[in-house]
Length: 536
Image 1 (cartoon, helix red, strand yellow):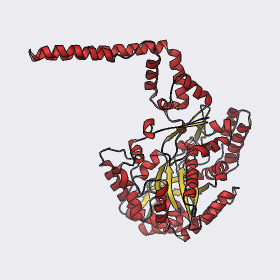
Image 2: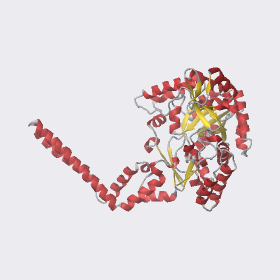
Image 3: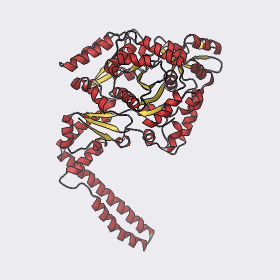
């Protein structure tokens, strides 16, 4: 196995906002609490020391309830119990309930969290650090999560026929996943690790009644040995801790005002960053069986955007007190919910997640809740030894891999061509010739000067066209080389995107079993802010 690294900016797949954050650009310093490095965690721990014992007790008890019917490791049970103690803190990531984990980066998120906890334990042995995966059980974007890819094929779940798909996905029944299981099993074929994957899928989705319990089982099966604690925020006991903030959002629209102000400051910066998420006046949904509808206020009454419910202020406050579990935070309010119920020090997420977290500092301050440090998760390109051999024979380096495919092919054709495909000397010679003509033109009228300029432009354009035609001709001549490079690049960057956003962990588990996860645990380090390329 070999590990190589590439700067995130050099990959071309990360926004200017995230690259500037990683570069610690001064202009962004007011949008986050403190930048994550090992030494900075000392101040973060001190700031989070105010997390109350009562909150810890509720968290530990509710998690114990959530794990009642799940067989897990001693390490995880120990971590759940430790959350009740004042010297214990969490490192958290979150993700949707994608079918069979969805894209590869699901694993990279969790491994990043686990490995950071290990690093912090070495640096601060007097404290305990718990890796947490927050399941996005209340999301309702079913089409985003109902599939995974394996062997270039898409395995898609149509969803239960007896329920609507508009409600919280975590509550959805896992009925009718037998067909997906059968198709996946057939594609896996024989083999030890194929059997493990088959059993893992069937155990998770055919023996658990809903998507929440299935996902918890699956993540636990993969990472319980590392003490991973899996949190379901769709929990009445945890939601009760969030009641004051639910009321604040409904009555004072604090998130809207604070985040809108932060967005205006962000947009005023010279870099002209794109806004990831815009706030609403009310950032809560109302959860019922089969539905998750936005709550709105029309000036007189609160109601649902779908028009199915209506409350006065007093009746809505009674509803919040009686049934906090019915109030679901949106993408901007959920970070506050996490930090209210977790003794959390750092949130690890992808570039898109960190982009909207960077809108939240003023909101956290107004809510008097410490904002966690923000750390970009590890990103990885996995390469087989066979693929690496092909790259070597094509003389393509790791850094060159991240070049746009069209530009990469043009570059390699120029390199291996037996004739030069660069007319730069001819262009320079032409420009020198026209200098003499410009000197003559300066001594006569303007019309001749314009004619010289037009002729220069025409001839340079002609050279450019000839250069492109020569390149095209050489591509045809070197067609085999071009086809091999195109096919290999498409294997590593499916549809021109990062591998981690398309491939499923089963692609690698099928070959290496749990050794694949061990390899990630040994090599990933989110504090090393570089893109990892692993050849196995």
